[in-house]
Amino acid sequence: MSFLETKALSRRFGGLTAVDTVDFRLEAGEIRAVIGPNGAGKTTLVSMICGRLAPSDGTILFDGTEITHLPPWERVARGIVYTFQITSVFRNLSCFENVALAAQRALTLGKAPWHTVDSSALASSVTDALARVHLHERSDTPAANLPYGHQRLLEVAMSLALKPKLLVLDEPTQGLSEAEITDFCSLVREIAADATILLIEHNMDVVMELAERITVMSNGAILAEGTPAEITANAAVQQAYLGA
Amino acid sequence: MDRHRSLAFHGGALALLFLLQFVLPPYHHTNFTSIMVLATYGIGYNILIGYTGLLSLGHAMFFAAGLYAAGLTVHYFNIDPISAFILGAAAALAFATAVGLVALRTTGVSFMIVTMMFAQACFLLILYFNQVTRGDEGLVLSGAARQIGGLSLTNPTFRYNLALALFTGALVLCYILIRSRVGRVLVAIRENEERVKMLGYHTFRYKLLALALSGLLSGAAGASYALMFGYVGATFASIEYSIFALLWVLLGGAGTVLGPIIGALLMFYLVEWTSEVTQSYRIVVGAALVLLTLFFPKGILGTLREKRLRWLP
Image: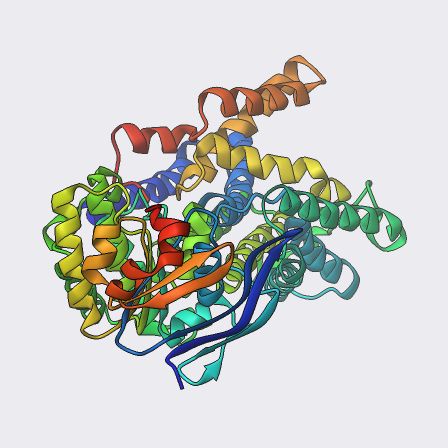
């Protein structure tokens, strides 16, 4: 049994089939990249995995149980965490408060909304998450005052505070500088030590550097899957995507 | 530090309200009593619009739920004012929860329309059952029925301090709420609900909690109004009273704890003064709404917070 599995998963928007009967498997501990041209259905696929979009057909299994119809918050409780493509930090809140929103959720899972959170446990959880992305010294800075690259890191810290088992990163390096991308890659490797990572990425250097396996999507279907070397050598992929 | 400043600021405002009763002439003394009760309604409304980002256009129904639940039981069953107050607040809480279960399935403009429809239905029901409610004309509650432990609610000093206690209670509740972890989630929902969902929160429950608390405070204000001023009428359930709450909060500053009372105070006197000059005071109310939206979208305290008092909750 795979860690994450979709069976004949489809999503239609009116006449358009964005994801077409996709069987996708992901093993625990992997770093998997999903690549493909714009409109290939990558974001639609992971949105269904995270519960942002309901599938039109098919099933999703996570960690041995079916989660096809679970709302997103219950998937978060099971360890599926999504990091937004468009930076969605709370701009008016400080870095600490941003991460605290995530950390308090992790600490109160399964408890009533008025359940009080031990503030020292919360603070240490927040500081840990911020330290992992090296933002712990900016704790009191409002998110809006951070440079863009740091906002992306804050976004990742929020995800980490949720203690993900499966972390979905949707184009995390978009808009980052070369140096930031290098740091980001080592951060992802560190995270991968105790989480499975599903990465949607356009930057092929990042994909080749990080991914253990690559899934190539095209027109809503999986075109190929394999190690970076296999994918680079695959003629169909080259034609559809790499453009060589 | 900021915490102390903010406690001093709000504590100071309450102390000022307490001291004002010794200097205000009788006419304004009564006005302030009324303003504090209305501001409690405003605080309730603000929890929803200011902190959770949900714009309701039917909040008068919760004010009226408290007003009628308290007023009718005193009038027909002669129950004591304390029980009537509790009953009024509880009725509004239950009603707000029930409305929320339906209305919160919508967002944005649809939410405004659904809440407005519910409120209009309530208003029309009050008129329809006019044998019980006396409709527009309303009911006057006798002074004899409005006694708490030998003190009459017609006594201005007693009434002023009860209104102050009610307002203080609402202020403290709102203050604690927004400083709490739940309050942080509400503000986050206002900023980006989708993100909050993906952080693992069942946002519907939080919005329902906000609406229930908002309804509770609105209803407590309505019940107090009926008991303190001895009058229960359909006007309080009309769209006008929903818009008033919106105006007070926008004028004072949505998402500020003291905004509603500043807004209620200014609007009260604005309406008061213009009614002396012209019958059509509504045109002034309308103009105020337009000017606010155009030039002062953050309201008085909201603008102050942006410019200097960043610590203001």
